[in-house]
Image (cartoon, rainbow, N blue to C red; front, side):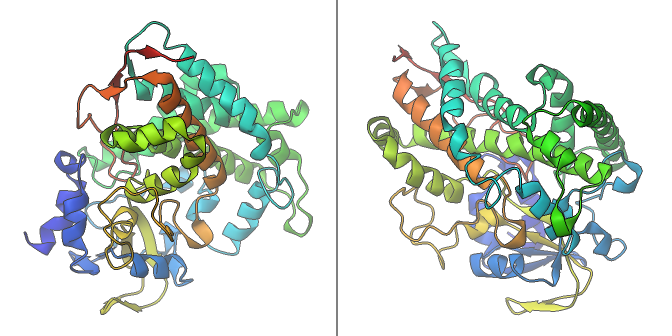
Amino acid sequence: MTHHTLLRQILDYSNRADPYPLYAELRKTPVLQEGSDIFVVSTYWEIKNLLHDPRISSDARNLSPGAAGTYLQEEEEEESALPPAFLRLDPPEHDRLRRMAMRPFGPPETPRRIHDMRSELARIVSGLIDDFGDRNQVDLVEDFSYPFPVTVICRLLGIPREDEARFHAWADTIAAGLDPDPGQDAGERRHVTQQARTELGAYLSELIEERRTAPDDGMLSELINQHGGTDGQMTRMEVLSTAALLLIAGHETTVNLITNGMLTLLRHPDVLERLRNDAGSALPIVEELLRFEPPVQLLPQRTTLADIDIGGTTIPKGASVWLVLASGNRDPQRFTDPDRFDPDREDNQHLGFGSGIHNCFGAPLARLEAQLALTALARRLDGPRLVKDPPPYRQNAVLRGPRHLDIAFDGLRA
């Protein structure tokens, strides 16, 4: 296997079900230059160092012309109704917007928001499982893993749950736009993605106006009406881009986390049985799932602001840097026996939520959702088993997870 073909093979859909042997091959060259302008980083310490390095930019406008390479075509966001969200910005703009978004979401201003949602989240989970009814087979994605986080993020933001049918297709299209190699015409992909961004922007604009005149207790109302002290107040466009980010990121990754989690537990029935009998084991199990099968596999949109020497390679200023988080999570230089699923693993400082200033904004909520969801499924499904293994996966190499996960079971426990 030649190094030049590794990235192409990782992006190839035929390897989506098990990219980990390719990641092991990739780690033999910690910083792999792919073509003339892409540098792929695959080992734990090198990835973590770069995630904390201020010379690494998340703003695509810092790419040298043509540096995205043949695998990634940047969206022309300035033509869209949705400007770049803070996830795609650098300090100080990133820091200001992230602080303002955090005020109605978590510490220090709103320290109990996620904690106080626990009972409501448990009710949603219980209701979705009750809806399985007398069936003995479900598609976990369609029947549970998708509707659960979507319902949660709608309630959190103050977006009508009945509007899900409107934004579902937009969110799917925008998330698909993250795929570096979607197997379709790049121009058509950009057009379709831009149209989805514009339509989602128009929908959120209407909702923002409604919340401005008739606020509720959702985060969207608080973002519109909050006064951020020295940070000022979000502009209308900043509220728009932040709301879109929270809406899409608030459910897309959690769908994968829950689905990948249940798939892994069904492949490890001893751990599933442990969770059924001990709800307290959910915390370490979810942390190991985030290492073992992270919902975000790689970050393909990073740029160097200066020449950086790392792993014996100099990455030039303006180059495109790809950080393969899922490979770093299986690095034997960091984790003992990394290809073994071990919830008792100590010092599990994984990269499942990234690291540094761009670590996952919604990590506390995603952790809680996964813990409650997997515990309830383990407790209530009698004799669960996979119908097909491996299941069919989503096309997306970045947001890797099953598109469907058919599970058969003997019935529901009370």
